Amino acid sequence: MTRIFPDDRSARFSTRAIHAGQRPDPTSGAIMPPIYQTSTYAQEGLGINKGYEYARGKNPTREALERNVAALENAMHGFAFSSGMGCLDSIMKLFKAGDHIVVGSNVYGGTFRLFDKILQNFGLQFSWVDTRDVQRIQDAMQKNTVAVLLETPTNPLMHLTDLAAAAAIAKKGGALTIVDNTFASPYFQNPLDLGADIVWHSSTKYLNGHSDVIGGVAALNDDGLAARLQFNLNSAGAVPGPMDSWLTLRGTKTLALRMRQHDANGRKVAEWLANRVGEKQVFYPGLASHPQHALAKKQMRGFGGMVSVETGSKEKAAQVVKRVKVFTLAESLGGVESLVCQPAGMTHASVAPEIRKEIGITDGLLRFSCGVEDVEDLIEDLDQAFKGL
Ligand SMILES: *Cc1c(COP(=O)(O)O)cnc(C)c1O
Image (tube, rainbow, N blue to C red; front, side, top):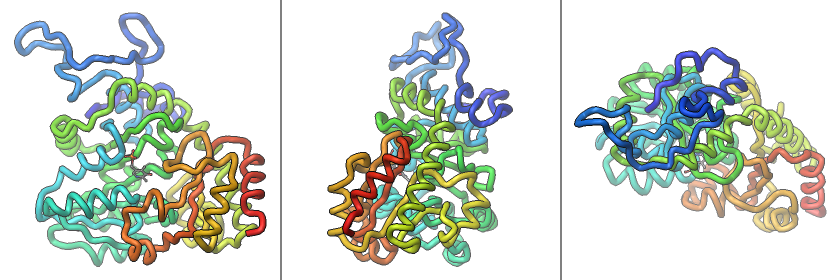
């Protein structure tokens, strides 16, 4: 847990992205935060130290990242982890056996796996609901519900949840609202401002943005909750190294620039695909044909670079991924380079086939992560890949 510098909330987004959490190093004036590659810290006497004892608990490079991300999410406290899943695992350890959690049915495959295959064995109870309709959250609330866990837009179907309405329902039921904001990034959406209690990210994706680090971050406002999460972070120890913290901090400096380009490219690619295969087959909240386009405009400031498309069959999907040259077939998303994946066989392979079918993750579904290349090259690439389809 690292509390933001008080003046880090005053500047506008891009300025915060570049400066928040970072001050020139007092010993040398170095403009970039040093990589404090250390596991421990010299202490002056028994019980006398500079606030740093052992680097699982605290590291100055990591603190700079934690302050930076907290400032971008309009939060008071930031936390950095060694992966998005490590972050979520430490968040879930705020709860105990017998607690009940309402979860969106179309969350990231790894989230599903962590809950269904591991945490359920420790006595946490989960109800999976289609949170596009917030009434279903209300209907799933129980006396022992401690949290409502949301992802919006979802991976890969781009379903949205009305965050303000969902957070109000959770609050009335005495539950925390926890939001995976990986897809939108803080540049386009700030769940805490809409009533959520904890926002978290796979910083592997847009925050770092260069496909060279695995990481997770969380941010929140409540001091008591922050102390509890810091206890979990230090106790469970899924912390990032200083080098990865530093790389992610370098990534967030260009977040605003990158997100504007991801968004511009995403919109153009989605429009092209809608013309090519029909707008019903394209999932992108920025398309006027998206069933939740109005909600997207209300709670997001842009739509980002993630576009999914239903090609119709596994064979057609296979043809597209075989032919693309600028897009690379790979898991992950949110980097400067464009990627494509087949969720059913890759990111969501751990979701049972019946459940995949029920929620619409077919074998013909492809998910594109539009990078920041020249969009003409992306469209030309898709044009040749979809030929004859
Ligand atoms: C990748 C991803 C995660 C998991 O994060 P890791 O950094 O891979 O552990 C969680 N949620 C979403 C939406 C993701 O895309």
